Amino acid sequence: MDQPYQDRRRMSEDLRSSRSVSPDEAFPHWAAPIAASVRNFKGGTLIVNSAPFRDALVEAERIWVEENIDYKTEEERAPGERDNLTREERIIELESELEKLRLKERETGRGWGAGNLHVPHPMEINTARPEDVAELLSEIYKTEWQPAFEYFIYKKKVREREAAEELLKLLQECYDFCEKLSEEHLRDLTETLFVPTSNQHLLKKIHVPNKADITSQHITSDLNRLRTSANTHIFPVVEQLFFLTEKHHLKAYIKADNLHPFIRLCVKCAWISSVQDRPLSITFKLKPGSNFYPDVMISRNAPAPEVDYLVWPIVFKYDNGPLLLKGIVHCSQLK
Image (tube, rainbow, N blue to C red; front, side, top):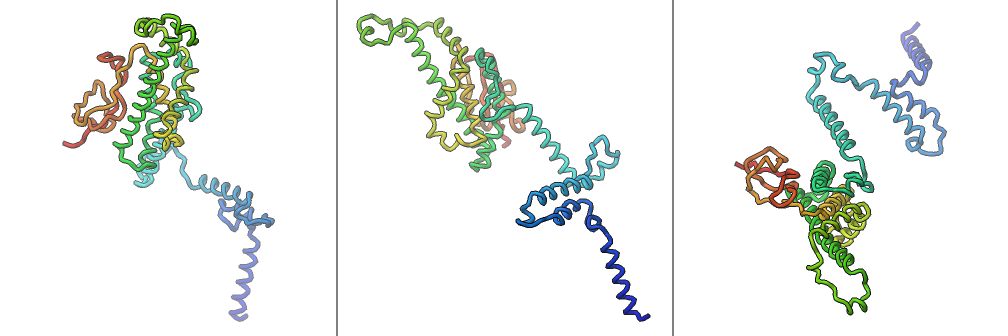
């Protein structure tokens, strides 16, 4: 039998044996769902756009991950196995752990969205004290400051110092607005309390005491307690007034998802503070080069003898009163 004939026969046998293999066996295990999807395709649209094909891709990815990814925890690995990780694998592992911690912090630290202000509870708002204001300020920094900070860094392309100063400026503007609104509100309440009519024709015929004569600390304190007890109902109005009055200045910020919740909580904190019997003493500015005092400051970077700029305010219960909240500062690293 000649050699060419034997070669042709061997090729024919190889071809028959390959045809005897099932279609699924001709592909890697993870690609079997994709192969099955292609075989069952009936036409009518591009196969890559068909739902069965997309589902097959997802299933193939799941199988591949299960076969190729090591799910061993740190405790399950052999003692020397972790030492054999490459530098890149170790970096990926650390980044994964860091992301888990960030997600856990978000879940425990901020259980609310833009339409649901979580801190503090409505009952606490209606009995808010200066200590509650400080706690709320601390919560704003922990939960909303970083997303707002990243908005300025990545969207507005500004430096870290400018971003921090802009956020502190927004907080101060909220306080300035609420203080003025609170004074106006208190004045109107006082006038209504002592003059039980708005009939101008009658008012012209009677003697109305001077405002200075009818205003006392006792009355102001009682009205402030009344306003505090109604904070849940007053605040939605205050918030609307703020955004309506400041809409031109805040036009670029109001619709920013990362910034709007920050501003809303700042307004809430500022209003609660404005109806306290005794004004809180809040430090919004520090002179660059000021001494770093660990008793009233926390450094956001490495501590140093001098402060470069203020990140978050220092809060005292009143002028020369006890400290309620340490300020966050950025220290100067220049020697």
